[in-house]
Image (tube, rainbow, N blue to C red; front, side):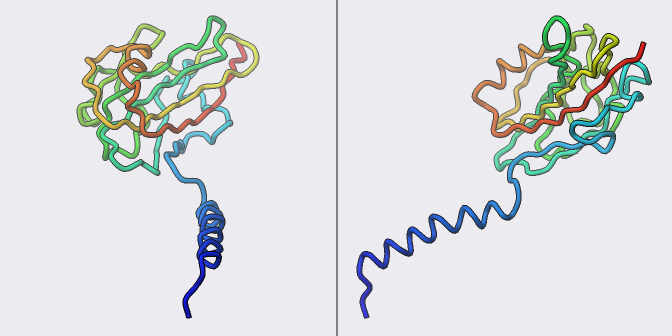
Length: 185
């Protein structure tokens, strides 16, 4: 028995309403970033700050979009008195990278990172510079990971502004992990 157009419209409507609901039940899609050193919104351990050994925390990510060619990472403190203070600029991490171990060496091109380069932070050094806020309320530290559709080819020592200009129009997805830190003294 042939079906009429109204029956076909009902099937299309049911599919249009049901499929997004089923996809939503599977959980969030997209790039996600985490650390085994601290959870989102929690305090960053002192060992990863200027009050400790100032080691970069371990990071891991998943949900990498197809066609990712490289990753970039920017860490900043938007609560700094003079505006966002940049703590880390890292770029051209190879597409197959899914984690950074703690204590990434503070050199232009860390040997274990497949040719990735580090930029200058606002401490005027290359590599990670941990949280070091003035005494008072906790500051928020934003770890932003970018999945890029191409490598950037920037020389080591690029600034956050240099990196953001180079990434314009090339970001496939972004993930953020925010930790806090306050100093007593």
